[in-house]
Length: 400
Image (cartoon, rainbow, N blue to C red; front, side, top):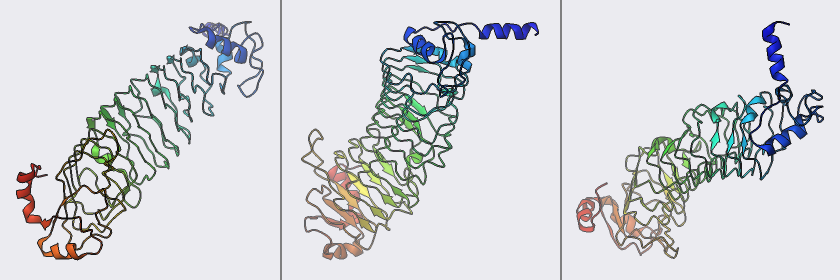
């Protein structure tokens, strides 16, 4: 045996020095000691070692840590995990609810899986660039990791991911995320993925075109300033923007057709609780035809919405505001809708909670709008489009 090989072998026989005694205890009991692994589910059985210790050679024999750390309330650091270079087989929940875990260094190509770090509310340091290919299901992987401030995720291999809901939900100390290079070709579920990341200021989303179940994707993300807003135009194969995608986003003040390209259906509650939203102008949309229920619920600062000439139908309670809801403020006294269609859209009627009281339509279509049985008599102000600019000055609307 040459000298170099002899030195390597000697090094492998040395015990690993742990910072955390609880981590050491678990590793020795399950993978180390004098006789090594005794349960084949963990890896190679019977690698000899040192009583009360785990050697680097024994660590290399581990192929799965299984659930030996699951919900442990004592462990704080596990940077020695990097020596477990072959412990890449995962089933999920490996470190779930280890709520005192602060630091961990994962081995290269460690496989992410469902709920792997969910509930690790003290976790602040993780070498996330070392993750290997993500498994099919990574739901809740970092949910409630309340102390994470940074995540290097730009080049994650997400090509096999199908379930990715609540991935970063409640990670309310994260400041920025760059996900634009993710390949989500197989993705089916992306609910709440960034929900309640209330300190995010910069977010670059992956391409979500054609992905349907993205409800509440950005729920309550109040501070986003830098983003790729057109990529937020995430819709299914029918061009539908699904329920609640922008709910409670305080950074949205205006929306135009370029912001949500290729849209055909505005999904229910799409902009609900966007308290700073003032104007929506979709006049130039070449695809919008329908709007589902309550897309602007509780948008207390919303002054006006403009639709293209192709709008065909509205869902039930499309203008629903919930004036009885607490802590939302009072809606504006004068709010408008502009229509460029000669034909009144189906189901465009004034439900009892509608707060849009000025309607502007083509002059040649005013009588058709007034006579339509689908329109409620409570629409008291139906005027030609030409009057809108003068009313902007009268009611202090921006000409948006």
